[in-house]
Structure formats: C-alpha cells, structure tokens
Length: 387
Image (cartoon, rainbow, N blue to C red; front, top):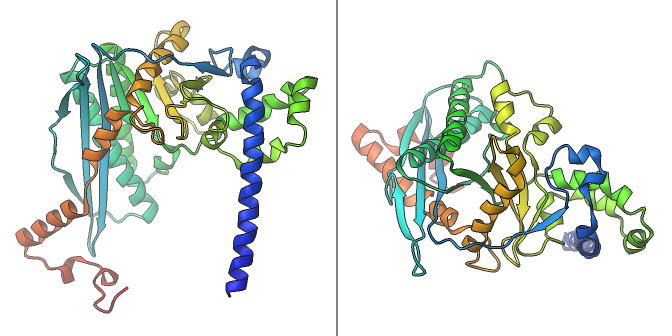
C-alpha cells in the first residue's frame, strides 16, 4: 500500500511541477508583451471592454475625507430531525478617514449584532436547502447595505462577494425556494437603484474567484499575438493551450500582474451569455452595468476579482473603475501575503457566527421549548459510541 501511495504521490508531484514550470515561463512571456497588446485589434473583444490596454497601472490615492463601508454576512445551518435552523447575520463597517491618525469606525446595525434565527419546516431537497441558505445570507447582506446607503453618506461600499447572484443560487421553476429568490432579486434591483441615486460607488470584492473568463479571452487573442516573430520566439516550447485549459483567471494572472496593476475591465453580462442563462430584461440591463476586472493588491497574494457598478456614465467607465481601485489599494496593504481591503476584513470577522454562539442559541432553544438533544438531533449526530 505504501509503495502504491508513494507512486501516486510521485506522479502528482511531477504534474504539479509541470504546471508550475509552464505557468512560470508563460508568466515571464506575458510580462514582456502585456503592455504591447492592443485590445482594439480584436473587434469581438473590443465590444466587451472600454479599455484598449490589456493591463493598466493604478496609482493609490489619499483616503482623507472618504467614507468607505465594508459589508459581509455570516451563515450557520444546523440540521435537526424535524427542521433545519438557519442563523444569519449581516453587518456593515463604515470607515471615516479624517486624519493621518486612522479612521473613525461606525458599525451597522451595531458592533456585535445578534444572529437572525429562522426555522425551516419545508420539505426541501438538499440542493434546494443549499440555495435557500445562500439566499438568506445574501438577503441579510443586501438589507444591511441598503440601510447603510440610507443612514450614511458613503463614497464607496465594498461587498464581500459578487454584485450579482451566482447561477447556482437560482432555483428551478416551481421550486419552493423560488419565492425567496424573487425577494433577493427585488433587493438587488433596489440596491442598484439606490446606489446610483445616492452617487455611491458599489464594489464587489471576490476573494476566491473560480472564473476563467479572462483565460478564455487569452485563448482567443494569443494565437494572433504570437504571429509576431519576436513573440513567437518567446513563447517557443511553452504549451500555452494546455495551460489555458487547466487554469483559472486568478492563478494565471498571478504569474504576470504586478502589485498595483489591473486587467482590462469587461461587462459582467458576458458571463451570463457564456452560461446561456436568461435574465429579466431589467436585471440584464443592470448586469451590463457591472464591470469586472482583476487587481493585484499585495505582492504575494493572488489578484482580487473586483466588480464595479457603473450606470449612466458609459464614457467614464475606466475613470470610475480606476478611481475606486485607487482607494482600494491603500486599504489592502496590511500584509504582503493577504491583500483584502481592511473594511472587508473587519466586516468578515464580525459577521462570522462562532460555534460557541451557535451552541448558546441551541441551548437556549432547548431551555425554552423543553426539548432535549435526543428529540432534536439526528441519530448520527448523537451516536454515543463515536463517529
């Protein structure tokens, strides 16, 4: 058994080394040629971006006088014999930068809000329960964001995650989760409209994106770029087509993006077109107003996927994006290996619902109801002989 395991691990190590070596060589070539790539040469790509350059340098700005909020949500799900219990919490942290001594920080609804407890008595499949749980967390975040827009004059609001729902959160037609989904869509519509009305820039920070949209775009343009003899010579011996097939955006961009550099921005609606998903006409319009780029915020961390809502200012899209990213950069310099903006870090820490907090709620439920663990817990959760 040990020999078989060692053989498998040795093969895995060889594959990892091949991937990393190819990525490193590919990244070295892209560092040489990225500033020379003119996106206007590719009409299909030019339709989806307002940028002519493949990468753009971002200069950090002073935060003095700015109000920047970070929003996040927490979720815990506990399964019992006759119901599922969802615990959600949404919180916003508002940084007011007034001097060099550091920001004044406000919290909404407060510094340590209680979780919202919701029992689920519906007979749902596992996938529907996953969707409902995710939608409850999204709803908590969106409701807090809307409250912040009403309560505080804010320049920039950073949401932990995307500015649009994920396709996996969309229930099938006729699902019991459809009503909650429609409620979340209504919250998105209200959020977009309010942010535009308040002239607040809405930004989604996706820390662990699995998108491969830019990788696919590279697959379209590189065959044309390497026709130039000097580029062909640089790429000689690099199996870039194989590399693109197994790579995601963040992994590949990390090989050639420099700190303080972003990629060209493209419309979020492109990803829905790629997945062949139909949207209500009003939401389709909003999806076209969300622009996606990747920003390298820390030397030794992967780039962040950043989504920015830009409505009614098509001619100023690059300017508005760069202005938002210029404020995000100095917020993300706490550690060279973790480039997440500080408002998101603070909101994330306060939104998490700990195991102890969850257990206190469960214990309180039992005390008030008179139920016991034997009544509530599933059989496998109360096995006296160990797992």
